[in-house]
Length: 111
Length: 112
Image 1 (tube, rainbow over the protein chains, first blue to last red):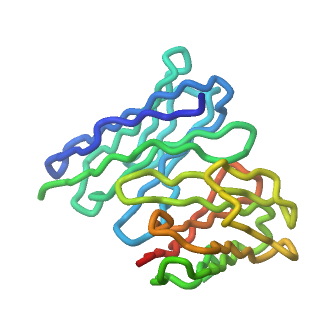
Image 2: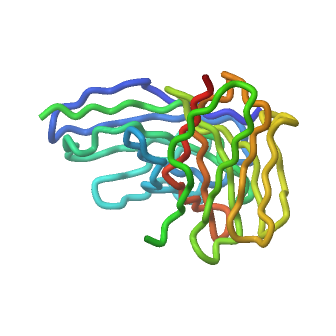
């Protein structure tokens, strides 16, 4: 079954804090795991992505941690800023095909 | 702007009417995807093209939906006999290889 489960549904973090969003998948054929950021009225924007041959990838304040055996991956946003307030989606794909998305996490960073 | 563009950005129509949306992908991206996103949900895959060939269609894509990419460049998504349940954001994405997918701003459809 191609499904990606995302948690939490919403998250409130103080400015400067760490935001953590988790995702779990079932299909072991998935080989690409991106995170997207979406602002109201806009299309999703690719933030960072990882493949299962590495356990962690960092780009600026954004880090993906990947646990292949647990079939879980997470997004960490360090030093969260009010401008990071958005909806975040994890996704997964297999063999460069369609993306299967999680339900999203609404992040609010309080200043 | 060299990103994915979609037209129109908003469309309001009456139930039973036909609508057509256009997507212009990033130049030289040979893969083009259509997704549908309803409020509070993640995007759901509808269909995708590699060049002009339509390679996969979701079960969500009923026979009222049709998509084309006639010359392997822009794509159109048509919905015939629209229903209120078709109200959603229709997103287009393009990709050079199929992994990194870059989304357009979407077309918001409201069916009255």
